[in-house]
Amino acid sequence: MRILLVIVQETSMKTYQISLGVGYVSASLKRAGHDVHVLNPNHSNEPLKTQLLQSIKEFQPQMLGVGGMSFHMRQIREIVVTARPMLPHGVIVVGGVAMFNHPEVTMSAIPEADIGVVGEGEYTTVELVEALESGKDLKTVNGLIYWEVGRKLIQTAPRPIETELDKLPWIDWEGIGLEVYSGLHNPGELIPGLIVEPGARVLPFLTSRGCPFSCTFCCHEITGRRYRTRSMDDVFKELEYLIDRFKINTVSIYDDIFCLKPQNLRDFCERIRPLNLRWKCSLRVEQVTAENLKIMKESGCVTISFGIESMSPTVLDSMKKSTNFEALANALDLMYESKITTFANLIFGDPAETMETSLESLEWWAKNNHFDLRTDFIGYNPGTTIYEDALAKGLIKDPLEFIMSGNSQINATTMTDQEYETLRTEIVPHYIQAFGFPGRILELSQTSTGSFNMRSICPHCKKELMFKGFTFKAGIINRISCKYCNQLHRIPIRFRAYATKELKQLNDKLSAVLQSNNNSVPVALISEVFEICQAVVNIDMGHDLAWSIMVSLLDHLNREESAINTLKLAINGNPYNQDLFYQMEARLKKLGRDDELTKYNRQAKLLSSLGITAPFDIELAPG
Image (cartoon, rainbow, N blue to C red; front, side, top):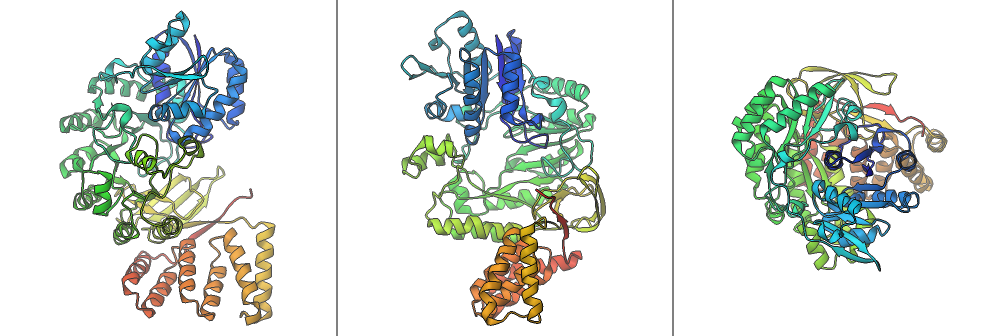
């Protein structure tokens, strides 16, 4: 059978984390003798629809398969709806985590699809194709849901998971486009600390499947909490083949949890060490020991991801993290001492979250910002405990509407919606933007390709660094890992809005008012000038003059709280100006809010000690 498998689109010819499930299904189908083509739309600048229609026209598949996570549902539906008219007699199959966690809802969301694969798809898809070719009743194939005549959904018996992973074929690396994928990533992209030099050839890789733990926000039911591993012989046979075939020098291990058995970790490190690779993995907190970190560092490990999620004991218990504040703090200290980059998040919005628990995590991070963590809000994804609880409580009223919304973040806490929104849009962004741990730029130049060459000072080890081919993200937060101490730090750059006609007009209008009034604002013009400044910063958040004028005007009107909140936004727009932090400290001290001012004084002193007074500004390109 001719089968077209489609990978969901995350980007176009840029860095991304590729899904490996389609590669396993493709390899299984090819091993069974079928003609399989994989469309990876991420490896072209053409629109997804254009690529899809062209692939169908050229390949003329008898079956089309696509899958993904719950947040991919709108795109999966787009793919299916686009393909359906061109495949009037073809079979369209949908799989992935989204299908497993809510098969009836997912099939209802995409009624144009014929069949859903529920669970791991390698054997199910092969048996499905055999049944279709032979005319065998689909009820005999475990792990399916499909539309029967009369538009009735039929779900077959669940398929047991494969426990012997060595029996599975290696991923269809050629099919999913590893030749292209491996070379897409520039220094500072993909995984923190993993790529610091141009020329990285990145391999996404799996040595195990599943997770035996039961964190409430994780979709673990697909494997029944069964943790399964490949043999080290199978792992390294494939790894060594791929290094030779695709010139791989960097490995990102996708395992949810890497080498739970201590002996497996030691064996892996011993065998990968001679290959001279940079590699990354994910560990449980209890695996982060001085001994493990030493052997991992010596074998080429440069980055470890592990779950922090919260520094509030209340929230950790609610999440069923099976760890505590002390263990997390100790693991972070050990990672820092080992000179392996820490890749971890603080996530907010668990049902037990309150403003107080959120501030526990944020205040801890502000004191320990040399651990440059990320932040996010928890997703209530189908298949998770928190999703099922929210559904039972009526917080999710329509599962079909919810899954198709593309937004899994809801307020399931006891906070009011206004408090939750303030936390999400004001408080967390202020902490994460304002209290970073930056290095000092000595020299910065842009190349003809749009990347940057940069000479800087690491704020951790104080050594001078030279980065070539670095790619910045448009925003305030850009991170890089030091080549010497391997610790993350921020780069004090700002992307400034392109000087559009509208922005030029606003700036001219503001300048005219100031010049005609000796750089002061008459009382009669306060409201007008404030509106102009507000319009300016809405376009260009890094406009220091507009922020300064707004704060001054609010002071003139004795609106102290509004002035403080506006100064916080000014700091968000320029977190590398120590004077703004001292201003905030003075304001809070005047109001007797000593519990709030310490972090501003600490950050001002940090910037001063690092010799950072202002960011490098980079103007965004037109359009």
